Image (cartoon, rainbow, N blue to C red; front, side, top):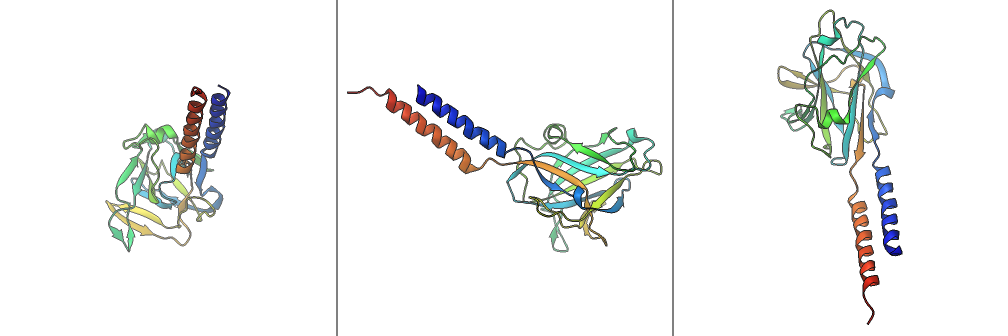
Length: 236
């Protein structure tokens, strides 16, 4: 019986180490490279950046995007929509455009505040996997490249939104190049500014459990089961 409990105890330790490795990780953060420039949003304008990372490795747990507003008199009327696209569309100047939509938050109202110093729109794990027009399936692993876009509605002279811009991040699992995708009447364009135009945002994710780790855990349990069978086998 002691062998049985030793197996359970060792497996629990092994599993705990795996869970620790799988803790939320910041894989993309442009807040530290803010370059003091702003992009003034227009009503219905869809704009965003293309993200590149190791494919089928990360499962997103949260997405944040920052915004500035010096004039937001009726914030309850202003809606925001976050979308994620596979970059599998028709080429634009040799680059695959955003194509298949794999996440759409839908229009969310009443979550914005007037703040000239900046505020954050946060999409939690529940927002990403439960409360959306196109939900991400549980455990969805991000592709090697995808584009996120942000769109606002009901902007006018009394309700203005600016997106802070940042230089390209470095030393992170995910990256972006500093240019941006713009959707105009259903047509995508990849554009550049005189400065890098990465929207200030942050993505957290958990890594996929390594196949080797799961195989090793299975081997431990199988060896333990074999050991128990030997111990229980009657002597001749």
